[in-house]
Length: 174
Image (cartoon, rainbow, N blue to C red; front, side):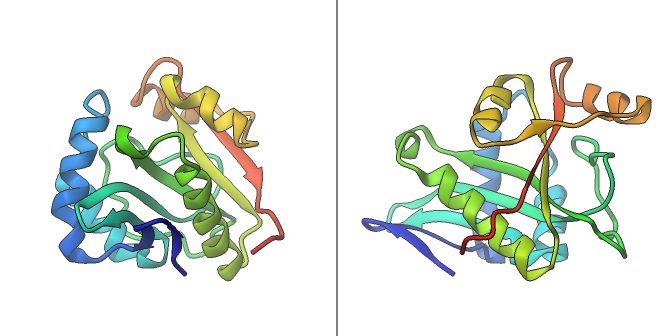
């Protein structure tokens, strides 16, 4: 499904979008760098959860998400190898928007895409790792902190000291 606003749309990510996505990630998430292979692997494992925000000028945002299980987040800059055999949530690995498209409802549109993917996979929960600087944004989107284990605390520390594991139910709306 494509969400549009003027000439800028969310569409499924393709392999030829990876270079622009990786460049945008390096510019936006310089404090949270990930190797190019992370992006390639996530797209290969869950193309149904990978999207770009694009127009004639290029890629202005992306969402990478996939099925997941439990309350143990993937470590920052770590390959998954495979997806869980019995997922229980839809994990938002990364949502990034260029400054030029922020404040226009693009993030809510991306979350709606993740919810649609979660519903298609019959997964009732969205989950994510919120970095310290992004935590307030995610709380405003209805995500709530989860109780976490010592193992999850160690994973969160790979992001930053204020990172937290958040989740919210998938809405019933399309």
